[in-house]
Image (cartoon, rainbow, N blue to C red; front, side, top):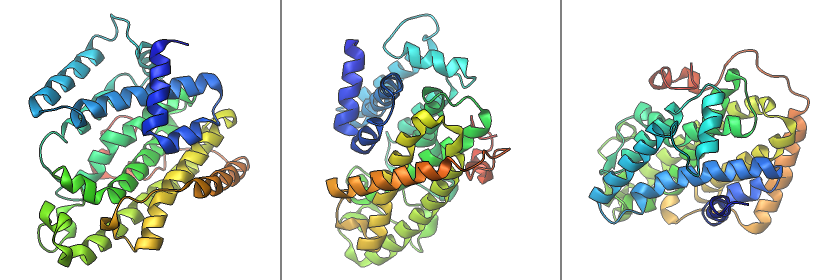
Length: 305
């Protein structure tokens, strides 16, 4: 096993606990490819989040952009991943969109409306779902929209879980158009008078996430049965975070960072297995009917149309 692959698997285990749990159910070769994709996405994310200054972050992003530009002519730790993206017809566009999404986090973030939120979720997570398709040997373009839906659903869950943490980093992802008055970082971190309004809109975002999870479930049948179980489990684990925020906190994620405990993970694995069994009796959609396809802001994005 290469040193780069060992590093990527270590990154997945440390930073992607839900994904790591699910990856245990992947065949070894697919697990290695998934770890490589996660390693690439983590590298992109850390280019901004771990940079000591905005100047360094900008230089890191430029280096990642150059990596995508020159990947045809040079070998690097992600060459196999890039080759798979080209061979399945996706090319480098999803990775480039991912970079655009991460780059937008360089400045103070205030999302204007729902369309801007969905575009951001597409760029930083829908593209990851899209790039997972060749990793999982999903070759039918009809499946791509459902993979994007899963990524968007997961990112919306992330946003709802991390409202307070993001605000401390000068990032407000809940759309301003959802609030009667502009929502500021201080409103989230110290103005408890607006907690009910924030909670209400967290629940709204979770409902949107649910619609994307439901759509993603319709597309699970495109994944070969040998690798499908892991995605059923990953979906169930991540979805549970949002459901707990709704059930136990009534949307008030200002209380902290919701997580799924070890015993709860075991229950989610059982539910994921149940979902997997259900998909064995489902038929493939004959055309792309994903939720992503209904969002006007995404119609021109790779994998949606």
